[in-house]
Image 1 (spheres, rainbow over the protein chains, first blue to last red):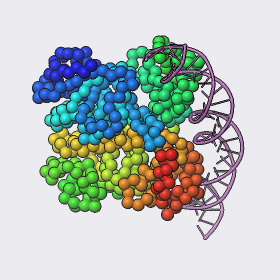
Image 2: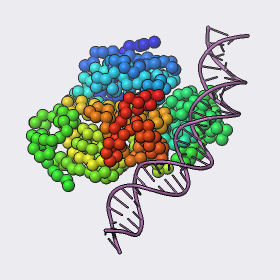
Image 3: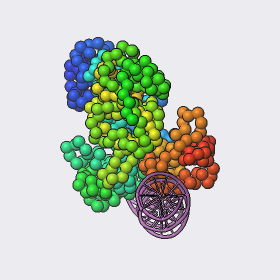
Image 4: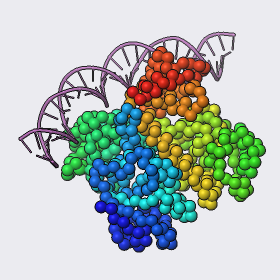
Amino acid sequence: MVKSVSLREAWSGEADCRNCALRNSVLFAGLQEIDFDRIHDPIDQFSLKPGTTLYQTGDVGEYMFTVRVGCLKLVQYLPDGSQRIVRLVRSTDVLGLEALIGDSYHHDAIALATTELCRFPTRVVRDLARENPRLHQELMTRWQHALSEADAWLTELSTGSARQRVARLLLRLVRDRESSECNLFGREDMGAMLGITTETASRTIASFRRESLLVESGPNRFLLDIPNLTRIAEE
Amino acid sequence: MVKSVSLREAWSGEADCRNCALRNSVLFAGLQEIDFDRIHDPIDQFSLKPGTTLYQTGDVGEYMFTVRVGCLKLVQYLPDGSQRIVRLVRSTDVLGLEALIGDSYHHDAIALATTELCRFPTRVVRDLARENPRLHQELMTRWQHALSEADAWLTELSTGSARQRVARLLLRLVRDRESSECNLFGREDMGAMLGITTETASRTIASFRRESLLVESGPNRFLLDIPNLTRIAEE
DNA sequence: CGAGGCGTTGAATGGCCTCAACGATGGTGG
DNA sequence: CCACCATCGTTGAGGCCATTCAACGCCTCG
């Protein structure tokens, strides 16, 4: 399942990386050929089945990851055992930034769908960033992006009624997408994202379907009535 | 009220910076004398009264700030006009990181107490960071810290019952402090931090006082019963 | 075929919100 | 100096919404 490709191959487009989601969107977008020549560590690329744990809170942050396709949840736990999903990580996003400053991972990272990833040693990023301003810039941008996402989860997904939260989550899932179609998560995960119970998440989705704000277009796949959902979200 | 000091003075300990909260804790901790010599822009240092707005969402991010003493809230607004406080910024923290990547500010920054700040042009940080690895490292650490705070606000302060949230907020305010005493915010601000109403915040605080989990030790100042509050927080 | 996971739905409870009133405080202006 | 007003914290009453606990149907998988 784990397939190893050299960074040289990665850059030259050999192996699977030629199909990599937009090279321009990826962390290493700013690297030159000469940078890759200086790296000897391998980049592994592999796939996770839904429900698989990529890493856990406290694991040593030896590696960082880029998501090629798919989706993972970042989970934190409270002392009483309840969990909260603090962010989603999707295509072209980076996982494990905290490793860059020497921290162990701060979340559990668990695949929500079948997910393909690239894995690279944290040390490689650290070394390259020291001398490559563009990578440096890219890292800061990634960090800021994660921070904006975190703020948005608080203001949009943890504020207001259950109906509002669910509507905002749905709209978020189709933003920057061509179609208004999206795959839904399990109700338990939706609850953990929105700070509501599984039952309330289920009831709200069921209610949206009865009102035709959602139309099932496949197995666990739905078309959204964006204008009306927006109305609910903004109340 | 605004007093201008050159960076040279700042570093050499002239002016008010000799009393600066731990130099080692500050963003510029890693700079050498030679770095300061290369800066010609002034660093302003000034004070805000409670309730004063430092900057607003969308303002051009020409400056960044370090908090010397005091406390500010970072506020975001929803389309319906309701507000949510997404983070607190306190002594030695940095404000306006988003300016570094060219963004305008993402929040309203409003002083909660009398607050002293240092203000420096974003361009200065950008230029210095390009060539100073230690500052670079420091910036990443700051970003990660903000991100951890954001995650904690979601898991600790936006999850569970009102009693739990208030207890966790109180405990947070005295963490890393010598005493178990702290100043409380207005009830409206507490509500905006915890995602509850002003009345619920007030009721909960009043209830804690009746149970002697809080003892007033001064004007809007309280001593905390940490063990019992911890029990409530962890339920 | 039975077991288990998942989504759904019902009924009842309770916690939080809404709306309202009241006292205390502090600043303002007559 | 004091009446006046605005702000803030508190408390009450009532209602609604989300939770809790439970049951049921559907599906996959062993």
